[in-house]
Image 1 (cartoon, rainbow, N blue to C red):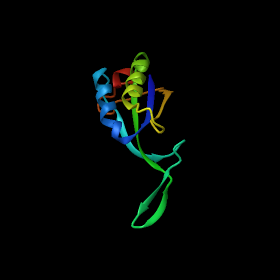
Image 2 (image 1 turned 60 degrees about the vertical axis):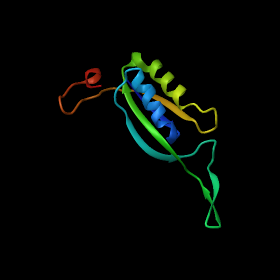
Image 3 (image 1 turned 90 degrees about the vertical axis):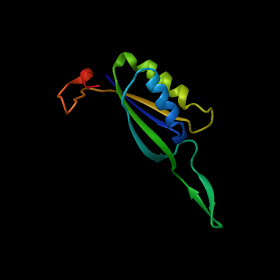
Image 4 (image 1 turned 45 degrees about the horizontal axis):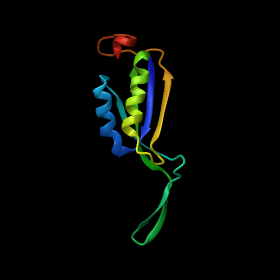
Length: 112
């Protein structure tokens, strides 16, 4: 099993969700986060005062899947989230040792 974490632009969330549903993967956790990478924030003007926005809004997706579905999921996320501009995001993959469905007690792949 794998745990896929993807950081994407907020306006791409619906596109990514639809792409993931289209390949038959159900369930994900979505968190609104802030961060910066190569974008390094930007300067904005508010009521005549200039201020620095260091952290930009992003969305973090976490999806637990079977290892054999990994390539298909990464392709769906990267294709749907791609704009070609800086700040499109990143995808991280880690091994998932155990998964337990609390309601039924199912373990590992049955719990997904």
